[in-house]
Image 1 (cartoon, rainbow, N blue to C red):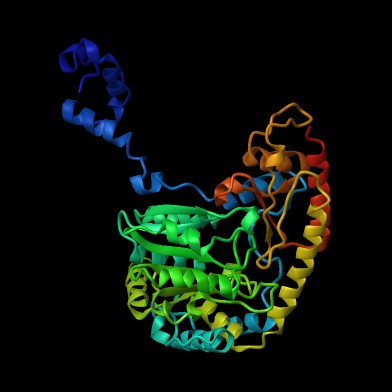
Image 2 (cartoon, rainbow, N blue to C red):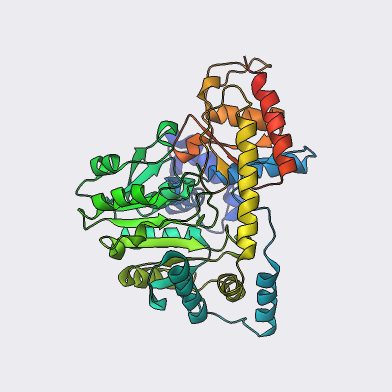
Length: 444
């Protein structure tokens, strides 16, 4: 084929740019160029476009800040990372030993989609013993982390246009999962003045004929707020009047609470058949990397989640399941030891935050986060003359100047706050907040 292609013959004078594109690709072609060939080239150049559903989602702000922290560390910067929600403890020895035994015992094959029967039985025993809740093994679905468990439920019960009530502040992924399911997020705000907990009155006002779900996280990420039994009962009385609403109760921080006893909204008989409990071993047993979460749900929802999971991941890791089984059936002293350590750190962090002028903080009753209000710094200037316009600016300033990573509250539905994790050593906590205080004191 000759390279002297007459552009005007194929394209006309007004299509010179397209002709140049064609000529750049001529060496790749073994056939006569025509309009069909041109379309093929253009289509190839558009192959990198992602789906609409993915384009509508936002990346995880917590993972993004953690990544930025890691990049600075790789450059030799001494960064203290308070952005990630991960216990700094190692998995207890008896749990690791159970995993090693599982390997030796050849638990190396696919497990049932919902998890081994022995693990699901252990979860039922845990729910009865610790929460006084009756579930059968066929109501339990084990997944690759509680994150997948939440997503399984949302994708299984939410259709396009269904509304899901999400109290704010909220965990970053709830909103994106509802978007993935083509549902509509209905945000109900509860600020520092309410200790970050919504009221029954707020819930009632948010409900419409399209409401299909309520996501409730207690103890809360990002605030550490814990709903009391009376507060949950008030919410349950509203929900019982609306039989189409499913409650997704994220209780992954159950074992990290400082009020003495975890309360589940599933305890109320009037709505029990419409509550899905989300839980797992990541936080209470320091097993984040094992990726083992689960739901305890009405049977029809459990079956739906099993159907969904069977098509895109199947059952979770066989070794992680045997480790989780040991976690639930073994001695629980390790859980209490870690809880006490987190409580000491909570008290230390609160005392240090209160020394920083411009931050307002509530005392968290659970989890391992503080969520101070920081809007008093908005509009002020850093020593370099940069204006702190919002919480994102403040978080980035603290990272770049103080070398402490935290996360803007924007990602959690509260633009006036920042989230800091105290799942790190007391030594790191003291140094981190010394740096934060120095940075914030310099803002004028």
